[in-house]
Image (cartoon, each protein chain N blue to C red):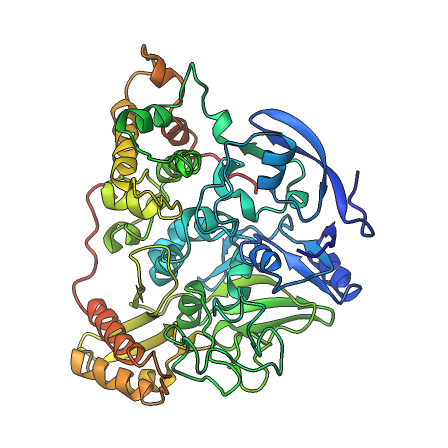
Length: 336
Length: 217
């Protein structure tokens, strides 16, 4: 690890101005990804600005019935929050499907969104990687690419975004509040992460020195049910090969009134399945529709040499997740 | 001393097992490094050093955390519990006792992390934290009541601790023993006669404290 200087931010605004004075700085929150990457030599900040003690720890209801989450809320606390469990179950399920108990206790809401890809070539300083060293090439494209992207990749990068939480936030139409040198702005969670194109070094639309301060969830659509389902190589503590977050509201006559579907593990960002949603909305909520919708979305897939399996895997995840949401609603256990 | 922007080391205080230690650390030092190299508390182990194996697990403000990923400089004033703070040779923590009775280890390298993680996990369950193994029904109707721990729940909640000897079946049994112990004592009279119970099962104290605010950090 390279030596670095350190300061503790006193306010979000002070953190942003401290960053502006130190171009080779990084914000430190839970550190579960940043410290690991510093040990690997992938991240070499000269200055750390500790934002972990900033008062961004609240989970508060909003006036319109949504929920506003501070960027420093720990993944474990967000997943255990009763409003999240009851009103945004796909978010709770996504958080609980990620990492380990120890890591969820440290990892923050803002940091989870900003975690870097787990592409092994990105983490290996001896391998060319356009994301780590622009212009050096992509080792994964023709290399071991079983875990890589099937949607939206470019000749420069085939990495996937590893977050489970971000997939659920995309499906719930969450908004991210960003604080920067030029003030604050709001970006939809589904548009926060980028596709790699010819600048894979940029994971997100975050501008230099901007800090995520809050994540706001709109009220869940009336009558909607939601779930997050993840396929991985082990039963626990592994990144997604593919995952699906679905929010579905069905009218009394069996017609889909609202559908939001997002995939994880397939692309450089959480993949909001807008094509599938168009097929779903207004159609009959049955397995045939769900399969047609998933197929329409995944028609754009361009698998690499070793990851064609992800396409039927994602299709089945979408169909099964949506189908489960049209079954009987969860029974309220006695005594609750 | 307030960390100086020009310096790459700082002086800070860590409260470890209820003892305050003021140390000067290179900013690159992790809490694990400081515990082992400066405070000579070598119970916490360096396994992978990347937050993947759990051998370095400590309790940070009562919550389990990978100490290899904590930059010490960011934890000035923090309260930590290591395996040395759970019990000693005369008076083992009930979970240490259970690991001994169940032969829940082979080489023993991951054991301190398993035990500290197990203690933290029992507190989380007592605080009502759900897990990936929790049914959608239970999640949907979450009340914050203590979570019931069956074997699937224990395995899921302990997945951040790797045992390359593969002692998992006995580790799960040891934790199950303490879970049963905690459940047996939950709601019963506070008077306890056996020393093991008096040593303070953290599951019990976690249950009692579950309405308290979440630790600040």
